[in-house]
Figure (spheres, rainbow, N blue to C red):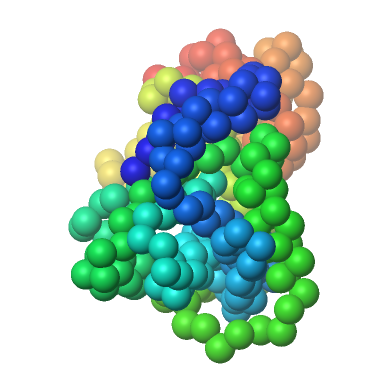
Length: 297
């Protein structure tokens, strides 16, 4: 396998320099025939293509297929060209680094990659010599541009009866399960955590030190040492004397009149959702430190 073109940063290198380097590599293999491969995915449409000389082969894949599978199936199309050719030496040009690395990794368990390795073994028995060359996409390499167009055009082809790896279904299964959980969570409006995060999604950015993370997380879920230690000590539930109400972390952060002036220095919100979604965590930490309970959380 040849990965020499990886030394170029496509976004910072003149495409002409990459094209020149590509031509220099090809010059060392003048007696090799070149096959170009590419996969394309647009929404729920997935396709593969291979171009050999003036011939093209395409394959429309099931909508659940990943771009990795599309690129791998394109290589299988290339191997079919090689099997039917009377030539014996070939270079397969692919812009899928992950596919080429998977082919090189003999411990891979992906069934499509295993199929590639199986076909290659049979071609080797037929004295076919195959070299893989990684090429960056969209830098003006003519064969790569041509196969890219073929793959995109194949997105409109009829679906083929093609098996895809079970791993390609993982993202859809994950999304399906997430939507079930999301729907259940949206109905739990009597849950105190629902007030802070009514919609499931990505967790907050992890940009704090470990101690700050613990403090913020405990405040978000409402379980802190200062408000729940009474359970361990079998004591009465703590009360806020100035406000004559239960001493909860929500009360401390939002309502307690004892901390009103200090609170205004760091944030000005009246509910937990705005506090944990619109106020920088550094401000919350600073507030807790100033009122003297940061290390009691």
